[in-house]
Image (cartoon, rainbow, N blue to C red; front, side, top):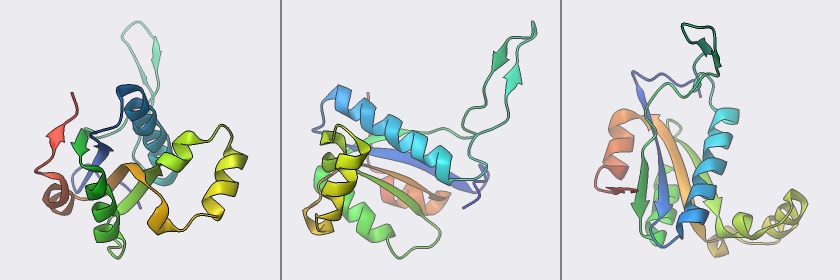
Length: 140
């Protein structure tokens, strides 16, 4: 997917029961993964008037919203067959692992129905993302 801030919206939806530290962890992991997978999401590097370097940041706002845990799974399922929406699910299983190898082993032996989601990132057409998330509260 190639991101266009005029056409697309991106958002993160976090389980409202997740403690703040784990919520920040989930948001940062999804944000990093977005940067890996979504072309043109991050703008060019900048320099201040006095020449200080500032790396590029995301082209569009990235609201972090709250939802019931079961709604995260619903979002994932609703978006699964929509080629216009990129989803980045993040699980409690991933969050509980100490190494990436451990994560790989555990996820490979788990069925998706039994993997609890704690957050999901969505990028897609503005109207579709708004329809899916417009009624959710902003994380504060």
